[in-house]
Length: 325
Ligand code: ADP
Image (cartoon, rainbow, N blue to C red; front, side, top):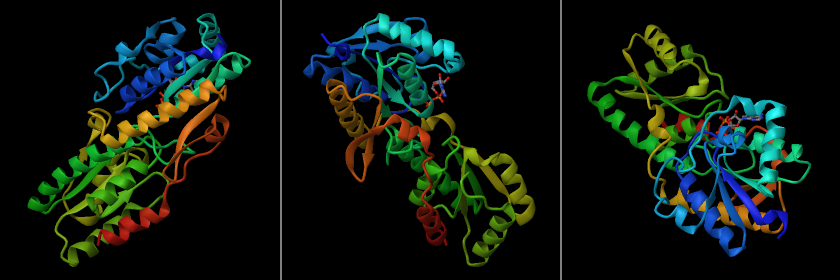
């Protein structure tokens, strides 16, 4: 048995719908390649405590449609220390693991890459991008993003009903950490009048002037989609109200965006990413990120993904502005 014939799958970061579908697919695709799968519980905190279980075909029954992660997650600040990284690599080696299969976001991938380096090649890493923020460089889409977008769109549609009835301005805060992808796509899909993202600075005075123009053109309700990374939505709303003279309400969508049953598209992405990840392990091609590029599954070196920030699509940003008139 070569070292890559045993893998450990882990979900160490923010949960995203479709993680369970991905765990299921990794376990079952591995069976075809005669690869044994272990599951690390509670992310990197569990890894450091050797909380690792065997996963077979039946361990992943009935989870394809469930949000969250059956392996559970945790934030583990300790894993950022080099001593913990070395310890994690040692634990995986002692369990005979040749590759750590990470389903997660940027932080999860960084830690896995460091564990691989610390193991001096004994434990490789293969990563499946999973995040509701869609903020991982090298992939057009992450597992869970499509589902979170649908959740946000559904919520904004409902808020619009109230905004129209009361002729109000609503600032709707959506997740996305330091990035505005989810906010931008939500704005485009809901026909929001404005979108505020961290990547593109726009003074609140300008929004106020634009809103006054919109009102004079006959618009009665206005929706501003506000990315959490762009600042404090409540302060923004207060300032907007002061400048424009209109009443402005804030609604933060919060954790509803992270949960729920994965969409069909998310599940398919999970299955196809997992299949590629297992093929990479079987071929001994490690330290790679599985990705979606122009509709096709591909893989790129982890180092390439980690070195760059994914740029926000300025064409879509302009489109929100031009269609929301
Ligand atoms: P995500 O994977 O969704 O980006 P986090 O940012 O919470 O989620 O990261 C997941 C885990 O990886 C956390 O336990 C965190 O402590 C760890 N982590 C994040 N960045 C690094 C890093 N540079 N080196 C080592 N561990 C990291």
